[in-house]
Amino acid sequence: MILTEIGRKPKPASSEEMRLVHHALENATRRRIAILLTNGPQTIDGIAALVGRDMLDYHLNHLQLAGLIEIDGGLVSPTESGIAYGGLVRFQAENPDKKG
Image 1: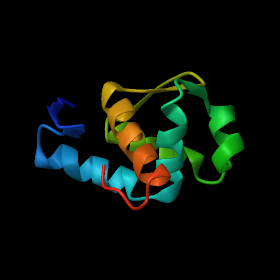
Image 2: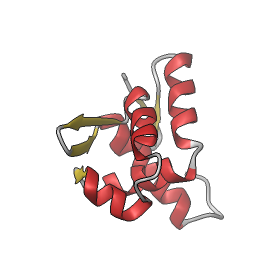
Image 3: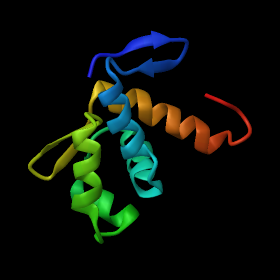
Image 4: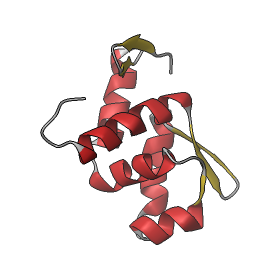
C-alpha cells in the first residue's frame, strides 16, 4: 500500500485499498489489535490474551489482506500503513470528541 500524507491522515493509493482498510478497521476487535500493534510487534498469543482466541485467525486475515500487518511465524508486525492507521484509530479511541 502506497501512502501519501494529507495532514496526519494516510491516503491509500486506490479505492480498492481504501475499501480493504475500511472493512478491516470497521470491526472493534480489529481496531483493538491495530491499537495494540502501535506498541510494536506482538506475538499471536499476546494478541489472543487481549482479544481472545475466538476468530483471531479471521481478524488477523482481514488486517493482513488490508496490508496493515505482516505475520511471520507467531509474530505479528504492523506495516507502515498499519502504524499510520493504528495511530489514527488510537487517537480516535482516546479522543472520541475530536476528529483525527
